[in-house]
Image 1 (cartoon, rainbow, N blue to C red):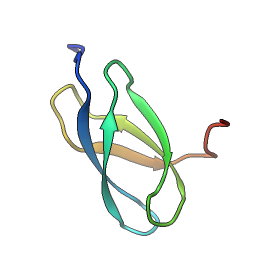
Image 2 (spheres, one colour):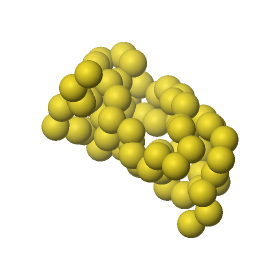
Image 3 (tube, helix red, strand yellow):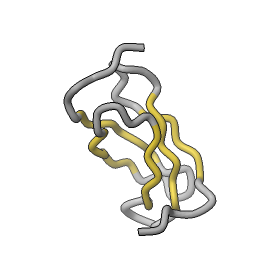
Image 4 (tube, rainbow, N blue to C red):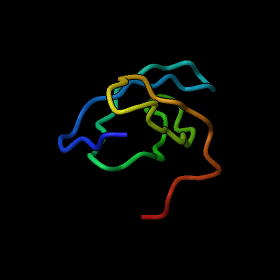
Length: 66
């Protein structure tokens, strides 16, 4: 899979509340764990491919510690 060198946008839909939103994808990172912007459910987002704008989404166990 080709690696992208620039940040890009990806779209996701929360499986809990069905809220749709965009997230910035950093280059070289294939998984993102973020809270849903609407219901705060921790979501595990992963890319579907180098050129796809939609993300695979599943509920994460918890948000990463900061």
